[in-house]
View 1 (tube, one colour):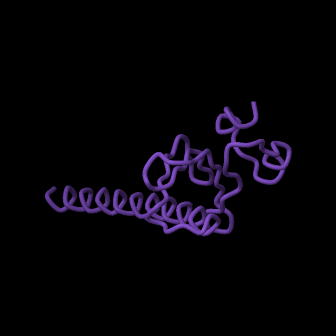
View 2: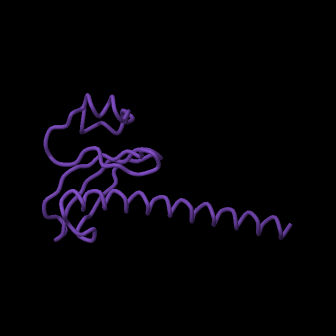
Amino acid sequence: MKENVFIIIVVVVIAIFGYRLAENKRIDEIRSAIATKYSRSVSDVFIRIDKKNSNYTVGGVSFAPKGVAGGAFMAAKINGKWKLVYDGNGSIDCTKIKRTYDFPADMLIGFCD
C-alpha cells in the first residue's frame, strides 16, 4: 500500500513539474518573439495571458517601465514552437488569422468579433 501511495505522489509531482516547464516555455518563447520584434531586452517585456490552450495563447503585452506602451497579442504553437501571429493595438487581418491559424472562436472575442 505504501508503495502505491509513493508511486502516485511521484506521478503527480512529475505531472506538475512537466506542466510548469511547458508553461514557462510558452511564456519565454512569446516574450522572446516580442522582444526580438521590438529590439527590446526580454526582461523589458511583460505579458498577461488571458486565454490559452495547448496550441493557442492570447493576452496583453507591455514594456518596461511596467505599464508603458503595449497592446494585445495572439500566439500559435507551430511545429512545437510558439509563434507570434499578431500584436499591437491596430486592426487585425481576421480572415488570415482564421484561415491560417484556426484559433478557437472563444479566443477571437475582442479581436475578430
